[in-house]
Length: 124
Image (cartoon, rainbow, N blue to C red; front, side):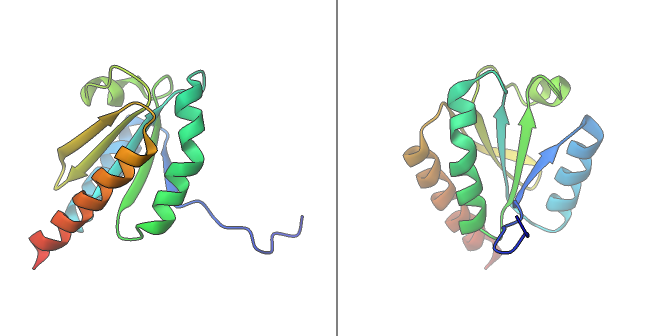
């Protein structure tokens, strides 16, 4: 493996409440929409969504994609009222705009597409 053709992930893993606050503040200040995947290593539907979430991150370059492991950063999951895995939260200007609970790739893609269209409309 020489590293050629390897694509660096566009999904940023949140390691702590401090890094969560940093990413949310940065994105909010820059007017960047955010999509967060709340996951858990023991939740197979959540794990199964990881490649699809990576794909979405490559498709939507103007959105910040974050992943939060429920067990590693419980404080953030509790604050965001995450009660099931996977949960996907769409945020704009530091506030929740939408949420998708469950491993439903078609619905998630549809919601993100609508979310980005409305975010672009707000900028004009």
